[in-house]
Length: 322
Length: 251
Image (cartoon, rainbow over all chains, first blue to last red; front, side):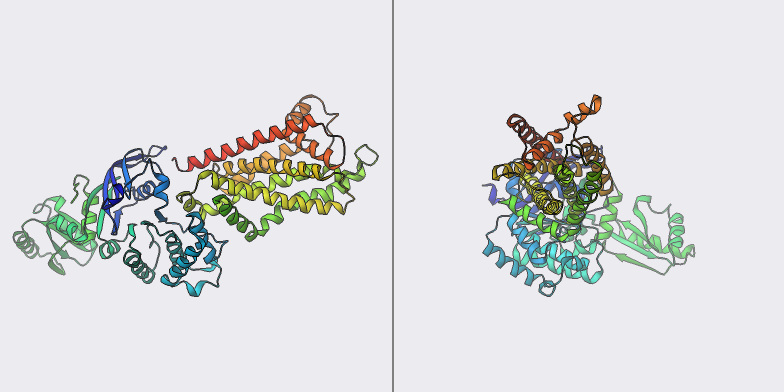
C-alpha cells in the first residue's frame, strides 16, 4: 500500500540540531511528487544540504517524520538506499578507476547482475555523451565531464529518486545549460524523480515542476514557479536610476510616500511592491517629476522568481505554503 | 560479496598509488639491509647469530604497521575526491565497507612481508620451519595486520587531515616498535622497561614468529595466548573502526 503513494518524498516537521549546537532544520515540511523535478532554494546555511543528507539516509533527523518512496526513513533506511542515488557537491568519482570501472563498481554496490549492468552502462555512456572520454584516465577529465560521469554512474542503479546537490555550482553557462538538458533527459527518459538544490534561480525557474524556498531550516513557500509568482499577487513598479547611490538617495526621499517594507533597492533600481498599481504609479511619477529627481525609466513589472526568493528570504515573518 | 567489491576497489587504489607500496617498504628494508648489516657486525660473537634473521620478525611487524597506516590515508583521499560518501548511502553494510578496507591492508602486508622475506635470503637468512610453522606465521601476520588496519581506519576518521594523521601514527608506531623485542633480546632488561616491553603484545608476537622462523622451540601455551590476544585486539580494532564510521553519520 505504501508503494502506491503518489509522493516520492514526504517530510513533516523535521528538526535537526548538530552536536555542535547548530540548528540546521527547524520544523521543515515538504512533499515531492513522483517523477517531478523538485527544486530546493535557499541561501547558504538555510539547511538545504542537511536536508539532502537526511533524505539520502546519511544523517538521522532529530525528530519529525520522513518517508521516501513510501518507506519510513528511520525503519527502512536500507530499502530506501537501494532506490535512491545522490550526486553531491563534491564529485564522488574514484580517480584510480577508469570510467567503465567506476560505473561497474557502482553497479556491484547495488548488486546489479553483470550483464544488465553492462547494458545499462553502455546506454548511459551513450546518453551522457561519454564515449569519446573512455580512452582517457578519469583524473584528466574537466570538471564538467567529471560531473557528467558522476551523474551517469549514480544512474547505474536505476534510482527512483536522484538527489542533486548544487550540481551546476562553479560551472560556466554552456556547461550549466548542458546540465539542464541532462536533468530534463533524466526525468523524461528514465522517469526518475529529481530532487535538486541550487543557488541559480533561473535554473529553478526553467527546470522545476515544483520549487520550495527554504529559510533558516524551514520552508517558507512551496509550489510551481508559476504559482509562486501568483503567490505575491503584487505587481511592482521598477524605477531605474543612473546608479545604485542615486537609487538609494531617491528611496530615502520617497520614504514618506511608501511603507519601508514595500521598497527595495536592487542594483540601480528601486522596486516598489504595490497593492494599487495605478495609484502608486501616479504617486511615484508625480513625486519624481515634482522634485526633479533624475531617473532613467519607470515601469510596471511582474515579479520574477528572484524577486519572490529575495522577498521571502528577507522577510522572516512571511511564511506560507501553497 | 560486497566486501570483495570494496576490496577490489581498494586494491586498485593501492596499485594506482604504487608509491605507497614503495614508501611503506623502504623503511623496513633499510633496517633490514643497512641497520642489520652494521649492527650485525657489532653483535658478532653474541648468542644472536645472524642478526638479519633476528630482526626480520620485528621488521615484518613494522612493515605491517606502515602498510596499515597508509591504508588510513586512503580515507582522506576518497573523502576529498572519491566514493567514500557515495558508498555510505549505497545499500552496503558498514561492516562490509570496513572489512573490505582492512583486508586490503592485510593483503598488502602479505605482499611486503613476502618481499622482505625474499630480500632477507640475500643476507644469509635461512628459514627453518615447515608448512605448519609457515601457516602459523601467516596467521600471526594476518592478525597483526587486521588489528592495525582496524585501528588505522578508526583513527583516520577521527583526525582532521593527513598531516596530523601521519604524525599521530608515527607517535604510536615507533614507541611500540622500540619497546618490543624487535631489535634486541629483552632477557636482560630490568625495571620499568621490562614491564613495558613484556606488556607490549607485539613482543610476544615477534618472539613467536622468531622462534618458528629460526626453528627454535616454541611454547605452545605462549603461542595460543598470543593468538588469543591478537584475536581480541583484532575484534576491538574492528569495533573501534565500526564505531567511528557510524559516528561519521551521527553528527
